[in-house]
Image (cartoon, rainbow, N blue to C red; front, side):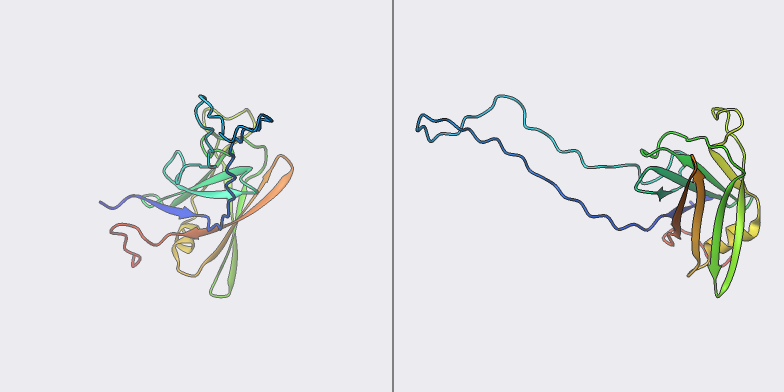
Length: 177
């Protein structure tokens, strides 16, 4: 079944370091046995967030995972919606402002698109966590192979820029519209 939403993901390279902690008994009695604790072993939690956002869109990391943006492309009406989310990519983040920007470059042509605020019912007065473009050209350009797309967002006075990449592995997805 063909989904009416297309998924976009931020390309990211992550590296992690896992520290193992061991308990070593230290007794001055000459005893060579290591005491064993009856407490359960400590667990190391890896930082994880969902692979998709609450609206089933692709996630875009903003900053050092300070925030996330979820990009949803509705194929039925050609709209592109971005939801601003917290560091866990689960809760909406409302911001003041005139909108978000997507800068595109494809085949040597640069274009800029504005996504206007469209507040959700839970957003703070005068702020929005949802931004929408009904420009069919944006949706079409994001779908092209080789497009260079960047999201620009101003959150609490700090500008964030993040690369948007399109995953071309849709089940039954036909790129020849």
